[in-house]
Image 1 (spheres, rainbow, N blue to C red):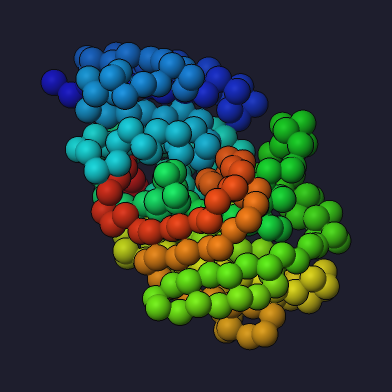
Image 2: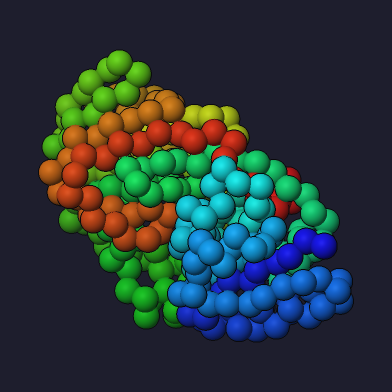
Amino acid sequence: MKKFLIIDNPNAGRKKAVKYKKAVIKFLLSQNALFKSIGIDEISEELIEEYDYLIAIGGDGTVNKLIPYIINTPKALAIIPCGTANLLAAKLGISANIKKAINVIANKNISTVDTLKINDSYSILRLGLGYDSDIICKTPQSLKNKFGYFAYFLAGILFALRLKQKKYTISFDDKKLSFLATCIIVANSGNMFKNLVSISNNCRLDDEKFDVFILKVKNPIMFFFEFLMILFNKKLSTSKAMYFQTSNLYIKNEFSTGHIDGEKRKFKDDIEINIVPKSVKVFSNI
């Protein structure tokens, strides 16, 4: 009999995780399944080894913490979304409705997706530097608790008024480029609000490539124009923006604060990114 390990983030989704955990436990009991429930801070490699399926109750940050334990293993990850953004769940067709999310587990539809290896860390969604990082890392938790995902939109307007350029040197596919930029986004999954707004409709979780977006402009009006061009999939490389797909990227870096799947990271060394194809199994509704 397959064994389930429930991992919840009790601080996720304005305390929804506690309520959702009860619903998941009720479902597993109805299936006579073997399971154990722990908090995200209790996770360990030895504990996970005993289980076939992991059920993450939380947001994208909660999911990101579990990826190193299941990458290139037969274990499958189910997601009960209750974080601020829940972008991976949206990409996998998993509803924020708890009953519908549990049905995805019941249907046992499992897909195998790519991940990004970023130095010694892993990501399913994206790495952000500059403006994208400021929005994710500097939006106050109190604002997110009050407005949910809309808080990022409010922060985005504020940070766009004080854009800063930084010099980057990147290498990919035998090319080397240097430039000033206000934002770099490296995306395995491009959706930024559910599946309604995306930095690329071409972004797929299983195509063995990732998308790179670089915005160079400092003027807020021009920045928003270029960003809208990306959102409407008019991704033409110009003097103000760049877009390309690759499976490897090297960013020369002295010191940058960024985010990986919504979690703040400080990069003191150069950043090396590689695709890890077909490396994580996930329950999905697509």
